[in-house]
Length: 242
Image (cartoon, rainbow, N blue to C red):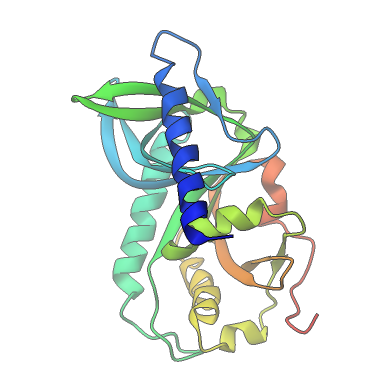
């Protein structure tokens, strides 16, 4: 299948989502985006004043890979997300530029994101003359929300992996050879363990795809919905030889 065709399909899907949202305004029921059985992800970047509140704003990545920019998270966990994101940024400022003492590779920027199991209620609004898409977080069951973090460039890959049948989460043992890998995977695996020493960011977890590719990550101990416990309490230990 040609790359141009895939890009065209992606653009059509994104435009369809935007058109769908434009049919809903602040006086109507929110649009329900995503898959009822899938995972969506909110990726915070900045903050914005909305309805008298300071809310996180960023991207919403849907289970089909569509990314919706200028998204606001309003409601439960808004303050927690801002605080957690600020802490991750501070840790990046502290460690990026230093060297991983295990694999001798430079640390990289990590990014927090918030996984929603099922559909996401979203309203289109205008803030300071610009269109935004507001996630009405109070309408999401808190058991369906969990905070994670990984290499910032791999968040979209993580979202795809979560929605790929056969993907599973596992724990890296303390003596795992993954920490010794002299690539970004090995660096992230160890870096999440380092960040876990600061605040509620335990690391040493890994997402394993059916093709045996792996994505290391950490979890946010302040946002741990029980419906997503398989991500922060995996029942498997990862063995790279298996």
